[in-house]
Length: 126
Image (cartoon, rainbow, N blue to C red; front, side):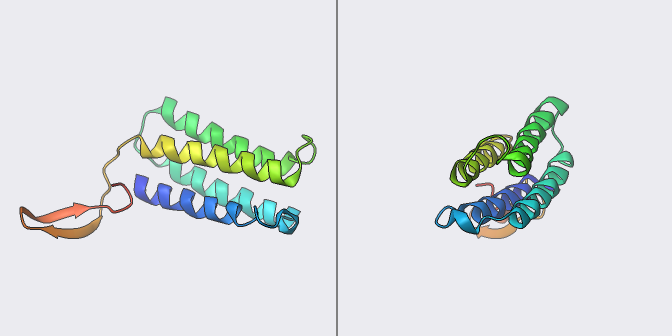
């Protein structure tokens, strides 16, 4: 698992959550359960990143917090919009932490430059 794929998964997750900002009433318990599953998949990808345990646990704890808010948002006294905004912020912070790791991106897209004809830069990480 590469940082690029984790960032792509986080970006997709953010898009799903932000789609409900315009119509929070469409955010149902079924949607919340599906998002919890999606976050768990991202957590699995983060577990596979080649980073030290402290950083990994920090990112995992933030994603766990987003899952908790999804599962318990109403019980915590959050209205739907506040719940969605909190989840977006937590996921964005997790994404920034992954992005700041500056991990190499294996199997990137090949981009030909006159000075370096075999560069494999990942568009997601640049």
